[in-house]
Image 1: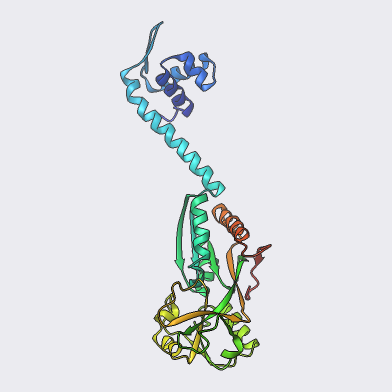
Image 2: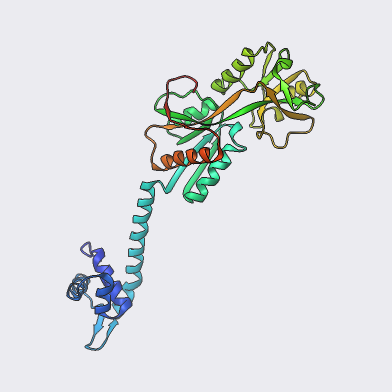
Amino acid sequence: MSGHVELRHLRAFVAVAEELHFSRAAKRLNVVQQSLSAQIRQLEDELGVRLFRRTTRSVELSDAGRVLLPHARSILGAVATACEQTRRASSGEAGRLAISYTPTVAAETLPRLVGELHARHPDVALQMCEMWQAESVDAVNSGRFDVGLARCPVVVGDVECMVLREEALGVVLGARHPLAARVRVPLAHLALTTLTIWPRELSPGFYDQVVGFFRAHGFVGRIQEFEYLSSGVFHSDPAAREEIARTRAFSIAFETQFDPMPDGFVWRAVDPAPLIPVHLFWRRSAGPVTRNFLALALEVAGREGWVANATPRSAVGGPR
């Protein structure tokens, strides 16, 4: 087949081959019969074969026509698929979305967003990777990932972010701690205890907000940074677990972060409770798939009552 065969020739051929009637095929294509006949002749002349056997009473496919028909259908189908996929990619309905997220959003916030994305845009392929806050910001800023979910990220460069929700931070105590029987623990009662938390280097914005809040409300105790840095954090840090179990220290967590809590430990609300935001961040040059996800995330946030009037903010090089 030479480069002069056009898609309109193949469409004309398939219509006549399936209808075996020029008048019906012309009506199906919404063209006049003379134009359809001319396109068939052009295709036959280009190929140097006769595709139909015509009589005054019938139209039949020739042997050459029967060979061409499945190829013509395949070509037209492939073109239609390519056009549809291109359109869907341009509108953000299909494509790839890479999301980096920090451990504390993995239990509730991220699954809600991902479930909505799967339901609304099933042709978007997801790649998700858990990272610490600083690494997540770098991954989005460098273009390795499209979107990041983290608490209080220190965003820089070509990055915008917005608050998606706020959650009250609570404390993790040993089950034998004198305050474990309380529904809500007064923060002042923990003022001299050791706080176990992940290193500031990994999540500087989150660390500063949490420690700053505790210090502002009278906490003067020692800070012990975790040594084992898995997503479970204190679950897998033997030194921190020992200190908490022996009631000499406490840790921090959100209510849905560890479900269930490991044996020997309890989660309790704290008073006053710091409200810690979850931020969504992305590059200003984000494509349509990312933009669709941002709109979807705002809808979910509004529907779930997470936060009102969320608006994007540009990077300023400090905690957001």
